[in-house]
Amino acid sequence: MWIGLRSVRVVSLVSAVSFSSAAALAVEFPTLNLNYNQQIYVAPLVGGPAAAWTSAGNMLTRNGSQIYEYSLTQNVTINGTNLHGTIATHSPPGLSGGGYAMTNAPDGLIYVNTGGGLQSVNPANWSQPAVNLGGFPGGGFSINALANGKIVYSNTANPSTVYLYDPIFATHTPIYTMPGTVNVDDIETGPGNIIALAGQTGPQITILNQSGTVLNTFSTPPTSYPDGLAFGSGTGPLGNSLYSNNNDGSITRFDFPNPGYMGTPTVTYIAKGAGTNNVNGPGAYGDLAAVGPDCAFYVYNGPNGGANFSALAGTRWDDGTLTMDGSITRIAMIDPLTGQEACGFYSQLEPEPASLGTLVFGAALLRRSRRA
Image (cartoon, rainbow, N blue to C red; front, side, top):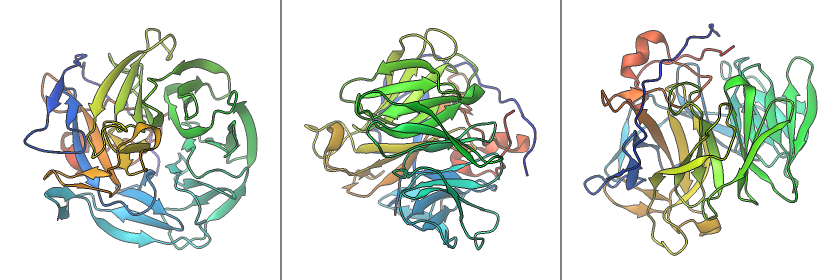
């Protein structure tokens, strides 16, 4: 059930650039900006790096035609790391086995980008068959929902073409084609139905409106190929920012000088990783990401053979163990005045007001609410 827009207060944050050391606790990102905290949420990850959520706030990931559901609470410990273990495996009839990406949408459905086009599944009834929605074959990576209910996704071509699916009229409209041979890995949506595209060939990031008009495009640091993206909350000192989970195992924040994500951004590394082969980069391969109902940034890290300056490692567990396992780490923004978490990443999935004081590590019961 969707409820009306509830405004989220974002506490003013200092723009600290110093990093905290994790000598005592060897988590996925050994260096982390003091305005954020981290927790390895799910590991070892089976299947793809994309995430969605149930109406109760349980994380979902996809492994082909199966969707895994995870506990709201930490219910398993591996290598000194308290984790949210699998509590259910769902197999909607007809769900395609190809691809990874999926997204929550305002109509309550989960939309999936597959090699055969779009599909939707109903998380309120996992036995209901997946619905084939047509469209253009995707690589299983790029998909997200706008606040107005439309779905934005891209195909596998080089260059990639971005499409807008309208669930009401069942139309697939091309709105933008990347220049040259740039392909899109991740798509993120933000305040005002803004769209951000992670261009893997550049590396570059492009920001569009829902009509496909380019609002901004810029190159990223040459060794930090952008992948999973997240917008700032839309309000507060860092509201006009964009975040990227990068292939080299780092997370960057792009702060724009002008409203609406305009102008040349200032780049700040908020997290840096560590791996077994620092010649190839500082950390495990950063891939897709999502923002949860707790306004936290959930980022994937895993092995990918040193591709795009990544290290040859997957997960750095809390006891210091390095393995080739994939994992999802929860990154949350911290109010420097209180030391408590603040809602700093834009999400269409918002918590119940009564749960605001108990968001740490997803322990609260969460419900989605739609932004107008």
